[in-house]
Image (cartoon, rainbow, N blue to C red; front, side, top):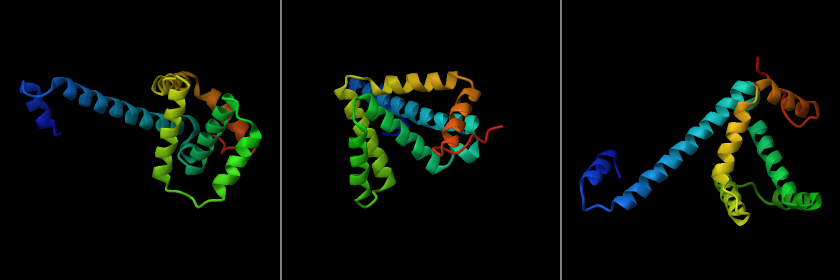
Length: 156
C-alpha cells in the first residue's frame, strides 16, 4: 500500500481501520528494529573503532560468543556444542542472508518456548550496553583480544 493509499484508506470509511492499524503498527515495529540495528552497529564503531567493529569476522565472533553463552545458560553441555559444531562444519556453507533469517527465527522460537519477550529483552540490552561508558566495553574487548578471541579496540 502506498503512502497515498494510506491517506485514502484513513479517509474512506469503507476500509477496515483495524486491519490498517495493524499494518501501520507492523511497519512501525520494523522501522524501530531497523533503526536499532543501525544504531547498535554505529555504537560498536564508536566504542571499538571502525577497524574492529565493522569487520565481518569480529561481528560473527561476537554473535557466536552470545549464542554459546545462551546455550550454556539454558543448560546445554559443552560436548553437545562441540558435536553441533562438527555436524554443521561437515556440511556445505549456507547463504549468509538466509542463515541470518534462520538464526533470528530460531531465537524467536526459543524465546517463545521459554516465555521470554525477545523484543523487550533486545531493547533492554541495547539500553543497558549503551548506558555504560565506552572504556568498560573497550577493556572487555581488549581482554578477549589478549586471549586471541577478538580484535583489539582501535577507538581513540
